[in-house]
Image (cartoon, rainbow, N blue to C red):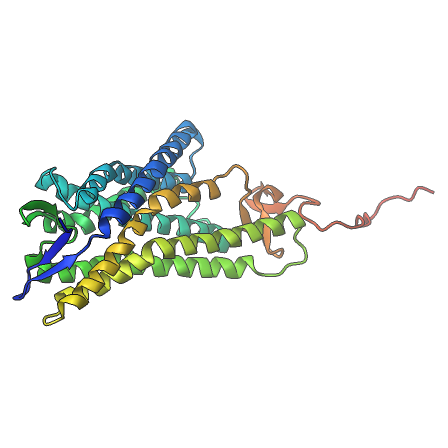
Length: 352
């Protein structure tokens, strides 16, 4: 039996031939499940074991890993669904919940990545500012709670639009909405893309552009070790942006195009099918963030790296080079200076 999806929301019925889903989606989802489950569980366990030394970044990473783990646990149902030619035997509520969980993980990951990026931006571009340093872990947990609330509020309509239906005497689970609800889903789908992806993505790019500008400043007074850390930070920024763009951008672009074509009257069936196939081919790659996010955790660990902060007059200076005395910051003598002959000491006695 062919794997078919019917778009009956218009006056003319359009049937999509989507046999490719029987291979692509089960293979990709299986790989994400096999890799994402132990990776995210390890991240959560590692953060929990070192919970006494939690930083604001690791709190965001903990919530990010929790969202990914919850999503990964739902993948076996989708693997079975697509391997059985879209047959869904798990009921209407489970269908709605799995779709809701997918988009909650997707947009939760985007917002937590935005929080991490803003945190890095403040630390590198505004290292001497105190207003964001005074807000401790409690404030970070409040931000995480606000992110979960916003994500749940954004994705709640997904739980309402997604539903089961009957096609060729088989129960299926619709991803976005039933064909009859495609018109009413369109404004919500576009709004979710703008608020849940476009705005955070532009914010991340803005933060990283400012960070790169600071990190790329030439300063002859910094040592070789600090210069290597700057280069590593720049490489990490590039990797994060590329991973973000590869995992999220194609999915949201093709989804938006598909929603527009699906909502337009009079579009030929073959055109709608082409956009539907393009969108559903990028959908599994959005799930790959559940594997890529744990890798980001190991880049942002405190161990194995040294936070860099801009110091007055010397570009970027490690935190260990600074001491606090009576509310002022002073650089330790001889710290992070280029190799060379020692400076003569003023006022010292001669030896004869």
